[in-house]
Image 1 (cartoon, rainbow, N blue to C red):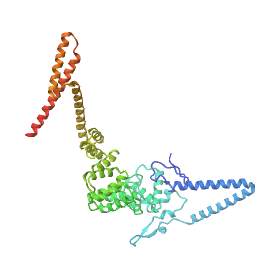
Image 2: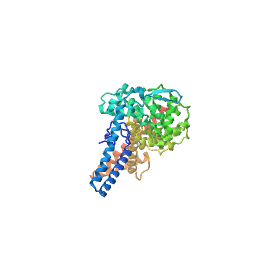
Image 3: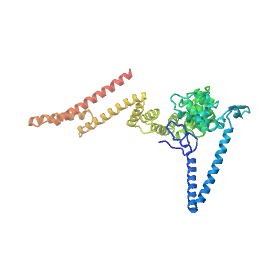
Image 4: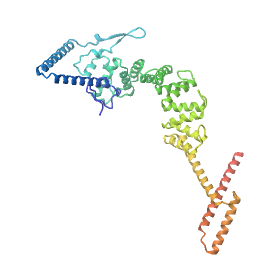
Length: 433
């Protein structure tokens, strides 16, 4: 169940674009409406105490009659006022002066002067602005009314509503997708300081959506949003300084903005900050700092950070060398489709298994050769002693299963050792050619 507005009775749905603290229908702030309701309840409570104190029936009826009479006078005045006023779009056009001093006709206040006894849809259909609206497919009548309410608020200069209308045009949700209309509404909200709209305007200038592609304009709006603390905009400013798009190329500035966003938890900036420390661009080369930022991004499933962190564990750069930890990060990156990580994960897992098998063989060999010389001489002596013991037991009729197992294990280890020495010699000969 969505939250219900105490002012208009509208109940929120999942399709509403309004912020959680604001009613999508009337634009009222829930907290303020609830405060007024509490004050009314308190007033009613005080009135109840007054009634209990003065229990005279005629006194109570007198005051109620005065209240009813006053209410009738107010309603009558409102009705006469509205009845005399007929809507005329041309009569209510507002002439405003823009920043350059030139006048421009604007009909943003048309909807304010429409008669109140009509539905929202009927009222807005009379406005010259609303006639050109194209709703998206499969939009219900209720949703249309809510959308037009947002357009009414946007026309009155509400920055949040302008942002929401721009988002509907941009995403094609509720309204037919139109990048030019989206750009117009985002720009109006951005000029009022709405940080989300500033990011939208910057991104649309960057990609050439609704505006001609212009990296300098994109950089200007990304910087405005970044200065208000928006992490994604800070990351983009860093990237544009790094690439020299819209700004002169400057690694120090890039690193500064990457770090600002990274400290707010932006995963792309954490990866980028790690790369700047790893390469020593804009900051002093520092593998420990690089590993720290790669780890923070990797823990948020950033695939490139997982791969790079695995490389650092393989090489022991900024972290202790640990093939098993490196393999873990390679596997996590490979699960997200990183091809190089998959190759390295397979190779590293094979190496770890081989090393584990070699460690196990060495352990068995040490047990078998306990008290014997190391190396081939110890193996030969151990083998001869086992064979002598087998001969003695056979003469006495004692089973030799345990001795045969020892002899088999010894010969297997010897064979694998010879094979490894052969492979190493073969590799050396191949390199010397």
